[in-house]
Image 1 (cartoon, rainbow, N blue to C red):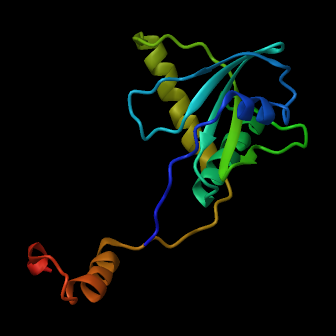
Image 2: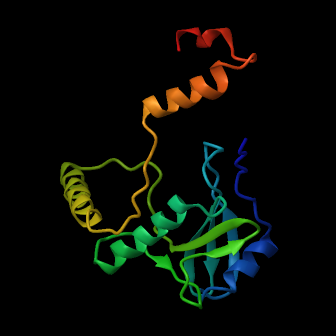
Length: 172
């Protein structure tokens, strides 16, 4: 059984230690972003001597997390309008810290309640289409994902045939 632990919450000292890996100045103020959904990755707004930045804690390194960060960098290189990731002083996309990946982005001040005009909605649609076009060129390692039938066969083979199989599984 694989148990996925949530990313760690960081202390102010942890954040100051992490920020030293970036060329973003000295933190003057650090605020945790309060999320309504607890399963979202913890985030912090850092007000530093060089401006405001957004720090995000990703769960333990995974293929999808690293690829998503590489994809953001790829979009930046292609000139696609995206939030800018701040590279570390060593040119890395993230800092590994206490089993998590820490990323710092530029800070974008977006109103909490944002209602789009028709023109803004059209622009977003246009950039979504462009995102799909650019994304087709992004190099991804192809992974064979199991189909529903594959999962059902595995379930039947390893769970249903055991003595502990729940009665609800009879239709498999």
